[in-house]
Image (cartoon, rainbow, N blue to C red; front, side, top):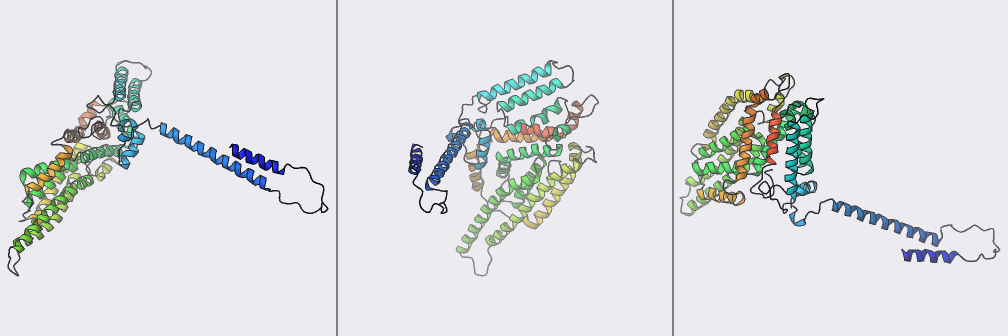
Length: 453
């Protein structure tokens, strides 16, 4: 800045000279008004403005860095999705912080927020503070609990936002349909809660664990047994999860198992040829290799058919069922238990017929050359990452079972949660969101400092 001022002063001094005598050609045109001194002064001003812009940008970056709550770089995740989540919730993603409460899930601030929220809930539900409106105290209790969970980050903010959908119908403030209308609608909120349960099951690798346990007990050499187990698991899980999600969870494991079977069949066929199979004779191992390759298509079809059949049995198994139940023309006449009682026999018949057809087309007489060592190796890899029968699998499976049980007993819950006119207030969307919130309150044994989801 001093150099620029000196240059400007020097330029000014160069033009500050005494006025000369008028030349002879006084009437000639004047020279351009943009002299060298003016050009230099404009360059200096542009340089100073650029420097001030850079300083303002630097201060903005400093303010942005200070808003990250000084999270340690060593505790930042590596995946892009986790990094975006850490930017929005730095307190929850700081896994290296001391978390002495709730089995290593909560820090001190989260425990304080939970206690304050529950205390506000109990006080306003027990004491009649506002006498003008009947449900004003219950609404204050819900708002206070949600605010404490939000401020102290007891749960992620986007999960805390689901608490009104759960608590307002349970405390007879308003119905599930009215509360869900502020977000989406009750059908969309039902699928949102069920989808979170699907994600938790996939994250805990519950379908893969279930398949491995069953295959270890029944064996993997008989193709019809493998087909039956895969179809049974797909059929049962698709009643709780989306049929598309179940197919995506089971297909990779089935592909890996079939690749191992084909590899062992190829090795057996090559060994048989090397041992001196006569020319023109087709060894049994080569025929079995083709049968195993053909069985792969049947197993893939079996998973897809069983998942579709299981999705028919419940309203959360496939989006089309819930969209039909949510039509206004039906007026809520079809509940989860009514649909389940009607569609379960149809779903069972469909999956049995599909299995019989696939058995005679692809699995009849096929022997899979899969050894128990292959399954033991995959089970060992799984146990190395998740542990043997981890608590995460049991908790997620329990929450998924709780979701189905509560949906089946939804009519009994509706009789208990009513308005003064006897109209039911609770709905299936409240039940699904309740199970989704539990996934963020229970600690994970595989990921210390994090919840199940």
